[in-house]
Image (tube, rainbow, N blue to C red; front, top):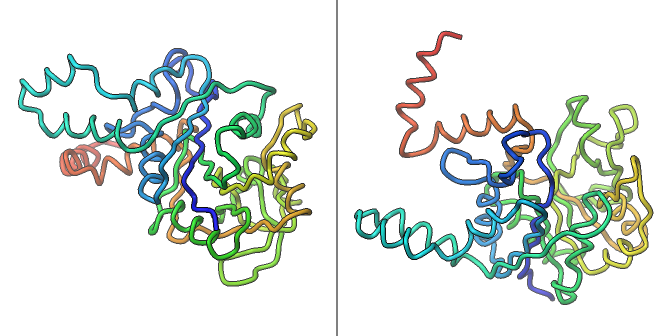
Length: 291
């Protein structure tokens, strides 16, 4: 059985919903209080046992590499002189969490392209694929739950959450399949953005994938979908007709869509309310607002 040692984090999007903020700053580096979104993703996969983190980048994404790099000597010296040992320890920890590998995305537009770009880097191993501008908190983590399911079923694993707002059915892929045990489905179809009337279920796959190398031949021959985009969900839909694909409902999950302005702001507020440095004062401030 192949151990899951690698994770791929696509982070090449332009972040147009956050312009002008994202003209020069990656959307994946937007802060949730004092930690960028992408760090939540990296910490989750590392906690689940991932050793190699492959980040697929694009133009104006150098800040991501700098964030996970060894801190520059001047910053380390300044923190040491200032007695800021906690901050110094934290920035060193970030750079030592995993083996970081960076590759520039090349190819047509769509969320299948970053996955197709890294085939030569995974060495025929299964791997996690989580996007860098959103994350899911769960106990145990979604990464851990998906890896445990893979160890049992030995196939592609999709991580889902139940989403049933009308707008959700136009944003995510939805699963059709047979529930083979509580919370686990054998996938027959994965339908991208079906709309509420055509959705086969309310189990949405929100960029949580554990993929096997079986996906790469399909990606190489894939035809463009709606709007000329290359959708990973459509490639997985083809795969499900050829190989076992499973979907799980992530237990105790809270999905944070931080690529959306309103949801990003909600996330900042929610996590600020539990941040040990500011939660008390911030809660007091919110209560005093005249809304």
